Length: 415
Image (spheres, rainbow, N blue to C red):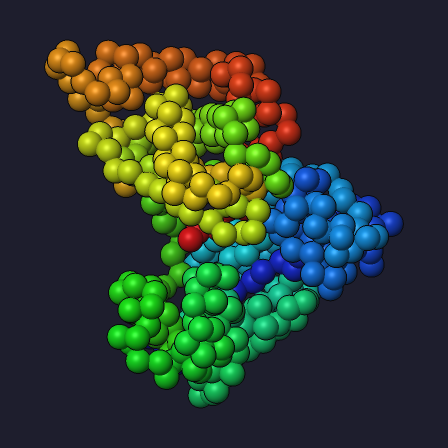
């Protein structure tokens, strides 16, 4: 690995809210949130009151009584996000876009053309501000993990370059929450061990971390705490999973709430799978309660599936299994479905017509195959006349209020 800091991580600041403030100058300098029942994004003025993404609208207004909610302009988000990333492409072809508003860039091969990585980072920031009209923070470091942390430290609207000679001094004083992969639950577990900073994490014995967080996560975080990150900037990597989620604010955990949401999510996930000629064997659901605690359940099937109704039926069983393990929880705030262990162009293996459990859920049976054929017919109509032209009735009722999947595919960050 190069001993020169040549990895840039560029991240548009409070992206969705910044776009809304740019489109409507009267919103500038005011606390705003994108969304309604649930906060999708908050401006820095709103964040100062504690408002954050994923929070219910009611809670956000309690924290910030003057908060102003605005609807999302998703096509503008995609257009402006693309423009910002295109500025990076003017300096190097080695771009790894990880969401609608952030990307890595390896500029090691461009130094002889454009000057030092720091100079290129300054030029990226200047041009995005002038050409796109949005603030962007950039971190420059020797590794991807450290570059991403540096861009967070640089916010809002700043630049941080980490000298390879002093990178551990820089890294070890920072809070563990800035590390890639440390969410609220992991942060809480580490705090119980007295680990608050990345330096304290680095000094924690590996076995202790693995006992607390599991072998894979504990080992990964231990390495990252010493800035051991061999990952290179990947210009293309195929998705290992497809997922969708719906934040619902605060809703009762009842069939009339859960059923339509799961069918809507299954339709989105399964449509994306079929569009890429893929299917998956592992189905995972996530249920988040109103106190932000979340539980997941998953199952690995003998055959890969991509049929909407099959996916919805299995997800429903998993969600109710999770709720059965938490009988005291009567309200939920989020549901999610994910499909992994993906296969390319899955060949439908027909099964013999014996008595099979859940025959309609098995893709190789007559009933299972019929569901897949029906979905493909729906896909063809949608491709020709638009997504709203046809679909399952309970799904279509909520479709117009949903964020477009084209936006979600860019906006959803890898886990």
